[in-house]
Length: 336
Image (cartoon, rainbow, N blue to C red):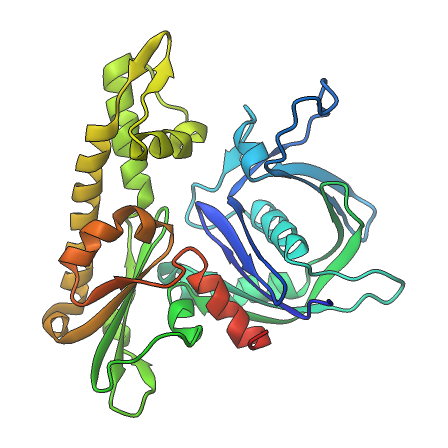
């Protein structure tokens, strides 16, 4: 099936993509590709090798996702503005894996919708749209067929708005609907008013971003790890350490078992409280009138239990990880 449109959410923690045929997710990490000296003898099938050939003949080959996480030269996006080279490589990989691209002498373009954190939306949206409209390359992932990917129509939305754009939200009928999208470095909060006509109207003064997210949990666990071991925790290990702590598994380091479960529970409470207080302060006197608050983003999976108790009418979106990408796709491509 030819994919005519794709919605891609290039997050700081994970890249998510939605098309009519599939959904794709992988960690937002890139690393140089190095030929496996064991010739794939122990290959576990995780992560992706991406080959990009540009119009000028320049060829770039990188690892993205889980495979990149295992590299000592892994690079993640830590700055407010994602470096264009990293952002576009991950976007092309996600679009390819979602089925985008065409072959032949006159390859067809695909329509694209992406998002930006609300704090950076106004300043970056026009430049991002223009750059993506000019992006074009022949792409191959994991040795698959080479396909040309370029974008016809490009739409850029505020992150968090995708949850409402997906159309799966039952509006309160007459009142306020909140959206809290907890990401890796930012939490976007939006407030919509429903005047009884089923049309969500954003209230600009109550919408914004907090400089808080899953990274605060990572920092707390890294501090506890260093306290117990005397050694810093490499950023590439953050996700693995969180998963172990969530499962109650100790981390084996220099012959010792390091337990971070208690530190994780405390950090979850502290970070969730900081997020909730920031959101409620931004909503001000309207907070008590909010009929429902939708929780989305990867942080909704981590902090959902705590935020459900702290925010008015809170519930986790049906598919919090893909909520934004799904909404972007609905707006650019319609329902499959």
